[in-house]
Length: 237
Image 1 (cartoon, rainbow, N blue to C red):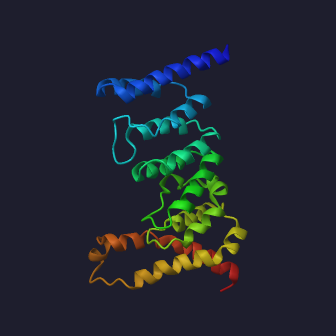
Image 2 (spheres, rainbow, N blue to C red; image 1 turned 180 degrees about the horizontal axis):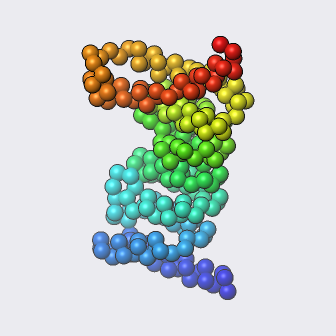
Image 3 (cartoon, one colour; image 1 turned 90 degrees about the vertical axis):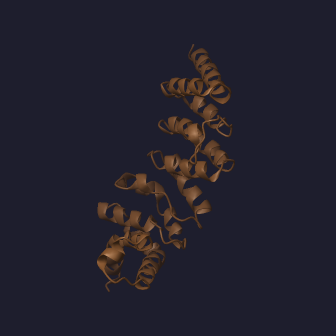
């Protein structure tokens, strides 16, 4: 009986996705709302993910309705999703790729966060910034992100906010001392790059500095001294 019910749900889902793909705007919205009210099972989620390369006609610069459909799946994340999301990532445009990475940060699922780290390390070396906003004040996910995520400190970007994330987790008391010891050079080099860049910037007054977009990126690292303090304390400097 359970298999029959699942088959009915899948058929219903397929019908609604077809409406989103082929019908008028109002019909698309109604179909999406109906899907959003459904309980997305493992098989249903996989079916949705495998259809997200389609052009559903409701697009924007972050994946449009495709990203909203993916969000429905990620709310109740199954480990099997990771392999399919990884394939999806390789086939979509940059806007949707960014949204995929963002959505992976919204869950505490280990498989999802493993995929997040993998995508960051493979694809964000030359990006302007690394999306981490949903990882702040969630110290429980440190063990899923690190120590692998320390490798992102090698990225030569001003907005390498992984350093800020590490600082946040240090303040929460969840960072393993051995992790910091093993990755000390990466952390120190990343902090020094911020200081070096800051020393190159000169302003006539505080107002000018506080309203400069480029300097604001550097000021985001103002709490990195917590990282440096912990490191130097361990070394006895």
